[in-house]
Length: 419
Image (cartoon, rainbow, N blue to C red; front, side):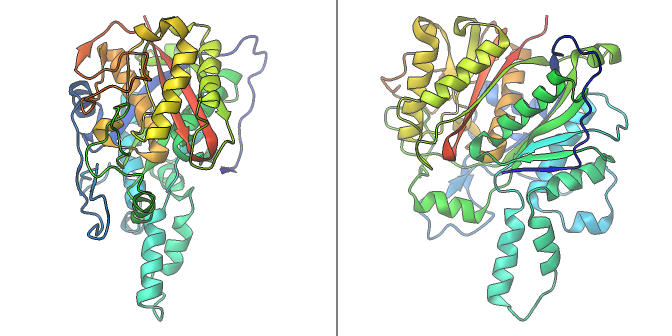
């Protein structure tokens, strides 16, 4: 699904070469906490945040844990009317916290015509669930139901964000399953490189949803215990929630403002395999092509990539297909490229996963360390690459992050550390 409103992207006049897309701000909120510093510390240590679910009843579920965010009671001080604040759903609050941090880190002042490109899968699912419960339990009552219908739409959280910050630019919502957040960042970087925009707010968000949780549980896709990506005995994924927002700018604009540059979005690849609705093609053909496209766009070889943040859901089929794709893409260099899946720490964030994992890559580049997946006990023999299982430092210049979604959506992003 791609929903676009008010497209206002004029192309740059006399553009002779693609602009460089750089990151000047990043905000993140996960079960590890709110903000860059607490998340960087948590991911560097390989902390896990799976606890019993409190947002809804799991007594009849096979799995009873998830990585919930402890949301603050307040909200960032932004321009929202009290009646708007009262109707905000959990997903919108996650998005606002991440956007506020990114905005502050980028040291931005008011910008009206700022494009927004966001990825999500559940969107306002929580409002839909509330609507359904009331319709079933109290069908005679229509109190607040029209508002829930209106704000259930996927773009509603983005519209709240625009209202909070005073933006009047275009809004694009990308719903490419678990690749949504990465696709959003990739699309935003393409807007910068093509000259269609000089600055873009981008990222992904998703809140835990009872409907989604129950669906995964009924498929027995959830692990009852710790998520163990690439472990030989992995038995399913763990769900989480969160949001990450990046501010992308053209290099020229960022340099003119004199702000610190966190990294460059050096490469982006996106493919679709069409193999099966929920299963990846066993050899990871489309995943391989996405990684290949990203390295080609960055103008580098796999050997130059210092770390891969894998999609790594902890499900048998996904991890084996991704391992096959990485092995083929890296070739003889596979044995020298460390890999981990940070879903072991905070779970699978669905539409937010690619954006949060992009932020983790930025943290790793800034701090020069590798985020471990400490739940891995026995590495799957299919992995010809080293799995990061303990905290460690590393000299990183390029990092790659993979995001693969239901329906065969595949996205790979490469970030480059600035000198």
